[in-house]
Amino acid sequence: MNNPSILIIGSNGQLGSDMVMLSKQAGFNVSEIDFPQIDITDPSMTERCIIDFKPDYIINCAAYTAVDDCETHQKTAFAVNAQGAQNIAISAKKAGAVMVHISTDYVFDGKKDSPYLEQDQTAPLTVYGKSKLEGERLIAAHCEKYQIFRIAWLYGIYGNNFVKTIRNVAQKKMQQKQPLKVVNDQFGTPTYTREVCAQVLKMITQPYYGIFHCTNEGYCSWYDFALEIIKAAGIDVELVPCTTDEFPRPAPRPHYSVLENANLKKLNMNVMKDWKTAFKNFLIDESKHISIEHQ
Figure 1 (cartoon, rainbow, N blue to C red):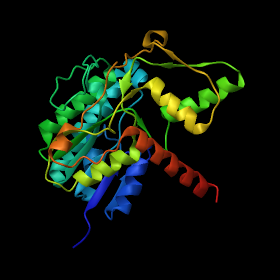
Figure 2: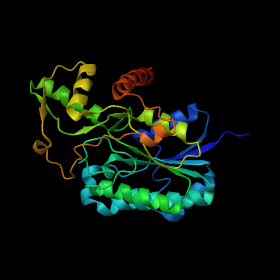
Figure 3: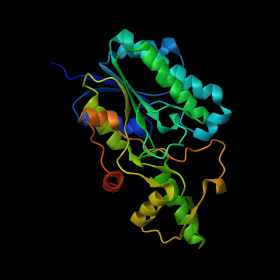
Figure 4: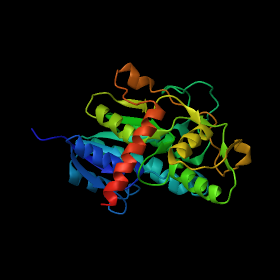
């Protein structure tokens, strides 16, 4: 029997890059595609690509994730995050493939004071969150066999993320002998890309469909996470906690976006580690990656 085949859309991104690598390691036949080879906002092109690949599973890692830019590029945000998701869902159904889609904590307003469950009321505050929620709804409307994974505070070896930003800014502040201010009143769970990949690959072949929260365990503030990052990097900079109000952004950030992986736990399928353990694993993986690059 042939190994099952996966088509990874958005394969060059922060999550997609790791998804390709780990899917191959897990023994799947992996096809990868990204823009401009596929434009998910184009229904006929999306269908053609998916029918050509004939995948058993489609993992959609493609999204317009620039949260602040979405506020001024509303049309693009909905074209990619909502219509794009719908186009893949329709084509997945035609191809008889299971659709796996990556969503976000931004579907919630962050006003709750305990971890969000999958069935909690959604109330996105931003264009990004609204477009991603619309994508979830359209997938559910067009495709029965889907798994939607909501992730949050994502970081990894590829792409831009909070870990890399904090290191760069901390380095500059250290040289300038200035303190680094980091927000201390937003709470969530730093989540490592490879943990998400491992969880998706554990679930993908199971006949479980619907919405799953998929973040590392535990939670912290951005300030707490920044402390861990600069400590691990050995950067001697003074870290100063500040409020969200001191850092106004075009798109409002949810104050509390801790997700509970309740549906995964009910199925006894949750493999997400504590966020501090996952961060240590990231540092190990990153140093291996750097040493390979320098060989």
